[in-house]
Each structure stands twice: as structure tokens, then as C-alpha cells.
Amino acid sequence: IDARDAKLSMAHLYVAFIALFLGGLAGLLQVLVRSGSFELPWGINYYQVLTVHGVLLGLILTTFFIFGFQTAAMSVAVGTLSSNQRRLGWIGFWVMTIGTAMAAVMVLLNEASVLYTFYAPLQAHWIFYAGLALVVVGSWIAALSEALRWMKWRKDHPKQTTPLLGFMVVCNNLMWFIATIGVATEVLFQLLPWSLGFVDRVDILLSRTLFWSFGHALVYFWLLPAYMIWYAIVPQIIGGRIFSDALARLSFIMFVLFSVPVGLHHQLTEPGVDGSWKFLQVVLTMMVVIPSLLTAFSLFATFELRGRELGGKGIFAWLKKLPWHDVRFFAPFIGMLVFIPGGAGGIVNASYQMNQLIHNTIWVTGHFHLTVATAVMLTFFGATYWLVPHLTGRTLTKEMNKLGIIQTILWALGMGIMSISMHVAGLMGAPRRSSFSDYGGAEIAKTWLSYQIAQAVGGTLLFIAIILFLYIFIKLCWATPKGHEEFPIALVSDHAQETPAILENFKLWIVILVALVLIAYTYPIYDIISNAPLGSKGYKLW
Ligand code: HAS
Image 1 (cartoon, protein in one colour):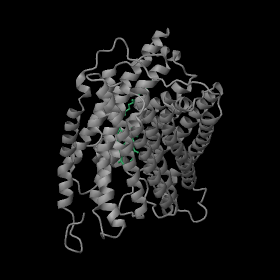
Image 2: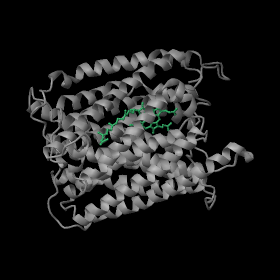
Image 3: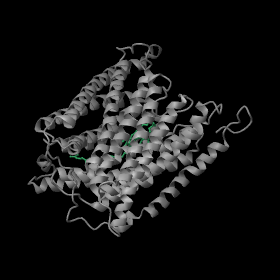
Image 4: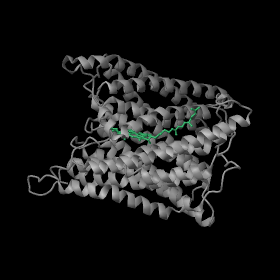
């Protein structure tokens, strides 16, 4: 990779991992408070800490890591950025960083304790909303720099199929761009004018609907870079091949189409949205499960083919042949494994009736700690272990590899203990997003106690894993021996069929995507606006 692209990529990773440290510390404080045996000092408020945790880990760590990774991936897959494209990348980086600083200062001053979903009627200082808007705008600029690089490649290689990793980055950015339109509308036209005092009130239902039109695609924006690593990089690490290029691309196109028009599955218990629209989006949610099932099939095939090639036999004995001692494989593999129960939990959440049972319980927190915080994060950790030495011109030593494996085990163990107890307590009715309380001595609250203590044990292990990860990261940046670490990109299996050209026809996919979004959202939003109550000034509130 070009040294100048490497610098841009590394800048993103530094911000990402500072966010990991601070957000992780906030997570530790939270589980300790919820266990009932710790009180926050100096008048710090629980929701302030919860906002630091959610915003830094859910929004900042992920977005910065993803753009850092994608910059490197594009540079390797379709070629070095031109100086103008790189300049755009830097502008995007600084706009996002300034936005992050603005939002972070407001949260730390307790002026924005509104959690990472910043639902109205909780109101934050306008600087918080402006900061988040800058993070989104900065990400658009970064995505534009990557899009320009890709367009240049297409021009130079007419009628050729984009290299798989480059194609995947384009899909993720396209989905991100469409998804962020909803949240940008909410922030610019509702939350900012309201927090600045230009309007008295905002339509809460509309703001939540706009948020979730973005919010669920957001989770796939986190997931797809992990899928890039699973599909295009892990096969090379194990010495195998990509099972099918076409299947990988098909699953990414399905994510592009179905990630946005499904947000209402986060609002199934919300009054004010007609049940038939919720049902339509539940059906579309089941559609977005399909590309993950395709992925599971495809990865299993890759692993089995490689295991058998190495002489493995039996139904599962070939698994033993995989390189378990290599953290570049081990960490993402554990992530995949955890994604099986995590994804199954998602299907429970999306099942209209079962959602009534788990909504707003700590089950949901357990679900996303298995998906984003384990499947995705372990994959990002695993990638950091080869990406950082690749970018800094150093090597992943045996010692660091071993520490990486210990870090992965600690993370999986901590997250396992914490998430399982969250799922169980959730089924017993324990609410999410609440500080410690005995709920006036209620009998049921006593049954949650032991699970809350287990969450604190898991959370403590996780914080130790973060410290260990940061130690390895620092070593890989500045201390391990100089050398060359591979950026692994796999080739496609000789047995795979040719990739149909239609998969690269983005004009067609954009038309279908826009149609699906319009079908899923136009009437519900019209309905919400036309049924909005009259405000004190006699006009509709929105
Ligand atoms: Fe979710 C809530 C539904 C996936 C994240 N989700 C959340 C929230 C977050 C989140 C953050 O329908 C909370 C938001 C908030 O604060 O309120 N989710 C789903 C569904 C899926 C799903 C249907 N979620 C994710 C992913 C996330 C994520 C991915 C982050 C990255 N989720 C919901 C719903 C809610 C929700 C409702 C709202 C609940 C409520 O009421 O509030 C699906 O996409 C899942 C499909 C996945 C699979 C698994 C496939 C397995 C694979 C691994 C293969 C393994 C291999 C190794 C090959 C079907 C690909 C095997 C080797 C061996 C040897 C075995």
C-alpha cells in the first residue's frame, strides 16, 4: 500500500481506538453500577456514562475503523488514491474528527445525556447535534473519495468486473449514503431547530421513524466490513479460495436493497404506525436475513474445502486442520461462531409477536453485544493484527500473535458471560437502559440481581481485553520489528462459476432500492404527518 494512503488509514484507526478505550471504560462503570455495588462519583449521571459508551463505541469507533479499513482496502484492491482523492479523504477525516470532539464535549458536560439513539423528547445541546451532523457529512466526503477512486478504475478498465473487495466497499458506501439521508433529515429539520429554540416542539413519532430508517442500515454498515473480511480475506489466511465470487456479490447487493426499508421493526410496539406497514417491513426484514444465510453457507463451504484439501476427513474432523494458532483466522472465526446465536436472536426480535416479549428489555442489549460487539468487533480486532503492521511496515510477531489469541479468548468469554445473562434477565422482564434499582422492593427485581452481577464479571473481563488489545496495537504501531506484513486478499475458487455482469449494474440496483424505500416509507410518513396533533399555534407539528 502507498505510504500516503497508509497514513490516512492509520489516522482513522488512532481515533477509533481512543474511542474504544474511553467507551470501554464507560462500559465498565455501567456494569458496575448496574450490579448494585458501585456508585458513580462526583455527581456523574448514569445516562451520561451510557451516552459516552453508546456514542463512542456504536458510532465513533465503528465509523472511524470502517473508513480506515476501507481506505486501505480500496488502495490495495483498485489502486492508490490520486492526490485529490486523498485530500478529500483527509477533509472527510477532519470533519468527522471535529464533529466527534463537539459531540464528545457536550456529552462530557452532561449537556447531551440522550443515549446513542438521541430520541426526542430527550433534548441535547445543539452543539451535540451539529457535531453528529458533521460526523455524517465527513463520512460522506470520505465515501466520495473512495467512490471517485472506483470510478477512475472503471474508466481505466472498461467492461471489467470490479475486484471483489472494491465492489464490496462501493456497496457499503452506497447503502450508507442512502441510509444517512433519514437521520440527516431528522437532525437538520427537527432536532437542530428544536434545540436552538426556533420551534417549540417536534413530532416524536416522525423523528423516531426517520432515525430507524437509518438505524437498522447502520447495523449492516457495521456488519459489511466484517463480511468483507470473512469473504475476501479470511480464505487467503487459511490458504484457501473464495467459494463463489457471484454469491458474495449477490449477498452484498441484497444488503444494499433490504437494509434501509426495514426500520419499523424497531418500532413494532410503537402506537401511531399502522400494523400493515409494520408487517410489510417485518417481511422485508426476513429478506435481509437471507444474505446472512448465504454467507454462512459460503463460509462453511470455504472452510470445509480447505480442511479437506489439507487431509481432514469425517463430518467435522476437517475443522481440526484449520490454522487455529493464527489470530488473523482465530479472532474472526470466533466472531462468526457467535454470530449464529446473535443472528438467531435477531430473527426472534423481528418476529412481530415475539418482539412484544423482548422489546425494551435487556435481551436487546444482549443481542447487539453478540452481533456488533462480538461478531463484528472480534473481526475488526483480528484484522487490526495484520492491517496495522502492514500499514506501519512492521510484523506481527509470534508473541503478539499469542497475546492476540489470549485477547480473543478473554473477549469471547467476557462477552459470553455478559450477553447470556442479559438474554436470560431480559426474558425475565429486566428493562434495558436503566440504572440500578430495587424497583420499590418488587419481588421480580430480586430475580435479576444475580444476572446483573454476572454482567459485571463479564464487563470486567472485557475491559481487561481492551487494555490487552491496546497494548498489542501500540506494539504493532511502534515497537515490533520492521518488515513486511501481507494484506491478504483471496483468489476465487477454480470451480466457481463466472460472475454475472448484472451484479455490477448499480443503476438497476439503485432504482429498485429507491422504489423499495418509497413503498416502505411514503405512506407511513404521510400517515404520521397527517395524523399529527395540532400545536398551540394551530398548525401541524413536525
Ligand atoms: Fe439486530 C435490535 C433484528 C442483525 C444490531 N440490533 C438491534 C440493536 C442493535 C442491533 C444495535 O427485528 C439495538 C438497537 C437499539 O438500540 O434499540 N438484527 C435483527 C435481525 C438481524 C439482526 C433480523 N443486529 C443485527 C446485526 C447487528 C445488529 C448484524 C449489528 C452488527 N435487531 C433486530 C430487531 C431489533 C434489533 C427486530 C429491535 C428489537 C427491539 O424491539 O428493540 C439479522 O440480520 C440476523 C441475521 C443473521 C444470521 C446469522 C448468520 C450466521 C453467520 C455466521 C456463519 C458462521 C460460520 C462458522 C460459517 C441469520 C453468517 C461456522 C463454523 C462452524 C464449525 C459451526
